[in-house]
Image (cartoon, rainbow, N blue to C red; front, top):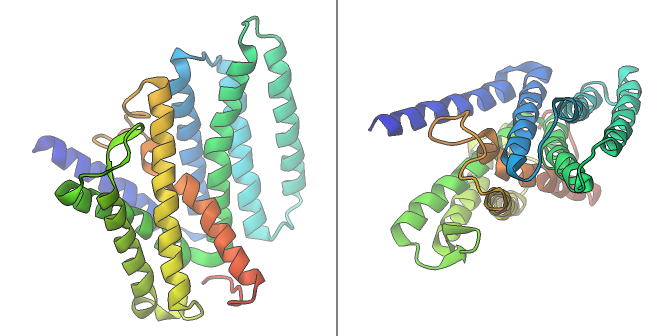
Amino acid sequence: MKNILIRAASGAVYVALIVLSILYGGNWAFPTLCGFFTFLGIMEFQRMAQTDFFSSPQSLFVDLLIGLLIITVTALGGLYNFGSFLQPILMLFTLLLVIVRLIMQLYSHRADAVKHLAYSLMSIFYVAVPLAFAIVLYHAFGAAMMLLVFIMIWLNDTGAFLVGSALGSHHLFKRLSPKKSWEGFVGGLCFCIAAGYLAKPIAPEYFELFSDGWLVGLGVLVCVMSTWGDLFESMIKRTFGVKDSGNILPGHGGILDRIDSLLFVAPSVLLYLWCWSFFGSFTLVQGI
């Protein structure tokens, strides 16, 4: 019982941070939260990989700085429509740091130095870049859309767990996640589709420009990409031989265990929105 309460409390804090940063945090709160997730995510990834790869304090510092600069540059672009004089300076500095990180590996005396560099760069690419896309999604399409995406991700997890626990008998991807079932996947899909269908009736002032079919399609996309994101992180953990990415969220594991779906969903949803905007299905309006 105590473990359930701890799990519920830590989960509630995580959800509250996201919801409050999106709805009431102004222009900087959600990007700042993404920066915090980037810092923790890179740390967790490299800690998971410690059995295969040892990150020196110097290389870890540079990796974290690159990841946080990617987030900062993206946030400045969204806030000032790429008009901030700091942005090109920071972009150049980020590129120079990437070169510095490559040069640093020349001085590693390990025979598998390239393998270690690959792990290092993957931690940045896997965590920081998708979270930067989440910031673009937030600034370009508004708080309501960002919140809807998170709700769909959470409903997908809930639907998959409830239906999978009750009816699951056919493995979805046994090699990586033996507990996931096709029944659970369909349950999560139904929850996401319902969220898309109900979005306009519940909040017409935010979603009136979107058709019901488009919102249902968004639910399908979120479900599929959430599932792949979860499976990909499972593959990482199995590769490194760990159960959880960390322990920052009691009962839930690490931050990567919580944002693994978002890392695949954010870039996919942003592309989905841009495609529909490009083909004229709706007019892109700031704040939708």
